Every structure is written in C-alpha cells, then in structure tokens.
Length: 109
Image (cartoon, rainbow, N blue to C red; front, side, top):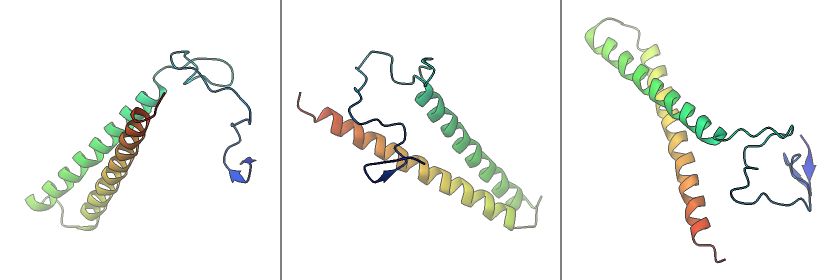
C-alpha cells in the first residue's frame, strides 16, 4: 500500500494531478483509459441486493424455527446477525453519501 504525505492507501493519488471535470466521463475510468460508467451504481445495487437476500434468509430461518422445521437455534441467530450487520453497514454508507451530498450542495461556487 503506497503512502502519500504520510497517509497510507493513497497510491493512486498524485500530488498536483488535475481533478476530473464534471461531465467529462473521467469518473469510473480505469488506468487503461476504459470508461466504465455506473460502476458505483452497479456496486451499490449489488450490495443492496445482497442485504435484501440476507434479510430474506433471516426471515426464512426465523420462520423455519417457529414452524418447527429446524430445532438448532445457532443457524437462526447467525442469519439474523448477518442480516442485522449488513443492514447497519448499508445505513452507515447511506448516511455518509447523504452527508457528502449535503456538503456538496452547501459549497459556495
């Protein structure tokens, strides 16, 4: 992991490099110059689907436990914990995105 000005993990950041212009299509561009629009949206959609799948698996595990199809409580607790943690992480990411949006909108031009 590269370090820039004492901060680890900023290997892709070059001091003095120009920032991409809004609407230039540079966001989502990889090193080879290939543009991949919608990478963030695709990643976010995939993660939301994964969270939904974990919520559904949690619901199914609880339903199986209540109906008597399974007697072992450990898989149920595990499924519920995974679903809870995934949902909390998703809400944290959502809150950070909303906060960044609000800060961007409050910037003076």
